[in-house]
Amino acid sequence: MKFGLFTSAQANSGDLAAETGQGFRDWLDFNIEAEALGFHSSFLVEHHFTGWNQASSTMMLLMALATRTRTLRLGSAVMVLPWHNPVLLAEQAATLDLISGGRFDFGIGKGYRHSEFKGFQIAPEEADARFEEAVEVMARAFASRERFSHRGRFWHFEDIVVEPPPAQKPQPPFWVAAASEGSIRRAAARGFNLILDQYASPRQIGERIAAYKSERERHGLSFNPLQIAVARQLYVATDEADKQAALARQAAYTKRTVDVSRTPDGKGGGSHVLAYADKAGGTEEHALYGTPAEIGALIELLQDAGAAYVLLAVAGGAGQLRRFARDIMPDFARSTPADAAAE
Image (cartoon, rainbow, N blue to C red; front, side, top):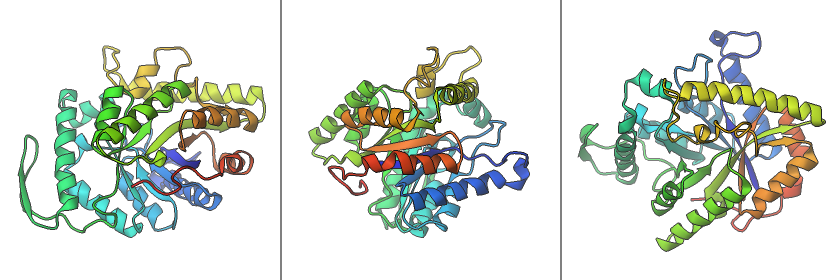
């Protein structure tokens, strides 16, 4: 199995204010150590207007990490396309891919937080159309070295060529988060790689992997288990009391996310976190929290469901990385059916 990270940097750190940027420097150091410990990748979120200094300039932070690492794959999870000019974003993605030596995994999405749609003054009803138009423009921009024009619903471009070309051909792989069978099958048919959410059960994960695999094969596309990443919250506990205290902290953290995601009338929309938030303990039910033996057993359930690549949202500092790498990762170090980065 491969293990990567699912991260959410904050500018502040401990007693140091956001203006110092120490939290971002800590995030860089955290990922540099992860590479040294054998982790495969690090995916970083994009969010705005939170009030708690969450990462908003995802590509800039990934670029900084690219200059300080050599093997770690660098992922966005996800760049929310409705917020961005697709030509400028494609240029940034290609530049990052070049500087990293072809290590960029381009996670893209439609957005789900009410506070962000409100802040950018974009109607949630436009999210799908904005996403589709942005993908169309970026895919054409990556694939073509010829000038082209585009006149769409949201964007008009005239006689452009997007520079520079990316290192990976024809483009950095697109990754999308999906949960429903329909969205998973659409991602598979388009050749997108897939991120499965932190909250689904191993049984659900198995069903989603099977749907993705069958749809790719139906469209004549090859299937590599590393084209699917399963996100999971992680905390390596010393005992049951430590585990329960960590779960309580995680529940409070998740509630903060839910609060900025819901609309004022309390409705949730289609986001994965909101789909689980109305069940008590639903967002922590399948987290990898426990002793090394307990976590190992939970990972085995994911492996039995067909997962070969897990992204860990680590609750804690580098000490958690070291414990996982020392006490858990070696048990899953055997090769996968396709032990190479997915194209």
